[in-house]
Image 1: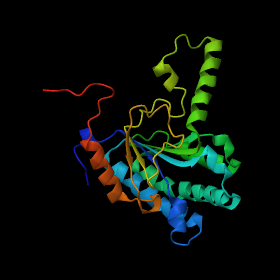
Image 2: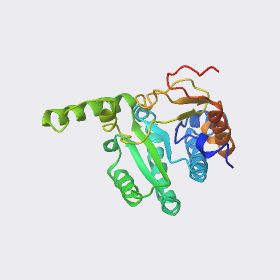
Image 3: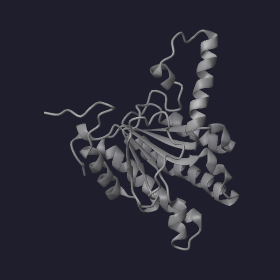
Image 4: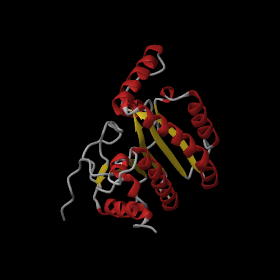
Length: 240
């Protein structure tokens, strides 16, 4: 199961789960069918991440811009999110998985907000894996929100010095370590406004596989690729 030694695995994997609609269209199915099958990919990847001992996983599920999609599709996505939380909570409790939502909670229907808060509260003490679900998320909005919140605390006098370490705490991800590895499915070569601050030195892997087809074997293959890379963080490669 393990791609390499634990020491070489990323601590934090981020995934842009792309291609659900195109997967469905290629099969002459309604777009929502891609989202339904994509949930199975989420389960597979979350399970593999937990088994591998990777402590952080962030999944880009629904962007701030996605609200402009057809109303029926958005409604179904909200329904699927509620179903997912209900069905996966027992597994989160059993496997010591902490659920966290990053994004604009206020954008969601009240009942769904209550459900997300409930799952976060029930799993808050879990430590084996933190599962961040990016929902109604925008990287630019996150940075702007952090600047405004930081400015308010500066005015109050509770912040005396501003540096990267202080600023990072005001992001949605808080003290979560930056992603070591970004996986994007469906072959698109862009970040799509995802974790813009946090990905300064993230290794990027793009696969043409659509998200509903992306399963454990694809995930392990991507992790093997990560383990082969040398991360220098701006340093010059050592030459013997």
